[in-house]
Length: 263
Image (cartoon, rainbow, N blue to C red):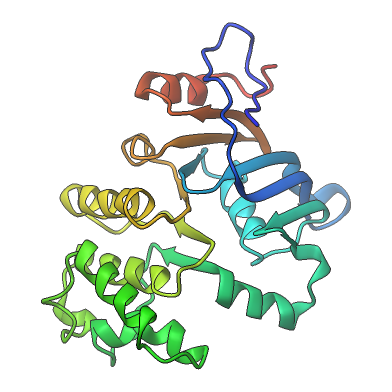
């Protein structure tokens, strides 16, 4: 459901009925205690639609990364609930949460996080091997399809040090896709790339949604990156300032410029 705390005059899109990949309800996250406490999230409610590319935007310290970490089960909320693929994460102990992340989630990081001693192909299938799954049959067909969509067929035998930054990030995206997760989280995936490589990587993330049927949540502070998304969530002072559906660039910019605390 579309949610916004913007003034009534602010342009918003109509809500669309859609399946949800994840939800957050009344989520708070506080670090420290007393006078030194930092309230990173302050009662966040959010729906993440399935089969869409969602960008989460906000200034440094806005809470956008904390929100992603709570949605991904990398951090636990102080209060509130997070549900991913119909599973309430707070009901899982650490062991079950680790298994859930491995089976249901994919991650793409700013620093690529590829193992330098492995080839691109070996890095891509690593999640399957760690889960004890053979890359054969339907999994092999999916692997070949992902590699083809990401344009990596002629780079599979290269190690990360032999690839450009953009190619390394494409390998990281393929690694996130290969296990067909419910949800992929991308944390500032273009932060270490030049503009040309950034556009290439963002284009492939969008293709993974439109051609491979994935759901992607990307944290970014870059307007150009958010323009590739279907939905844009703007976070400020630990709260959702706006949730825009299929926004134009000027709508995103206007949402970012609304004064903190505006209602």
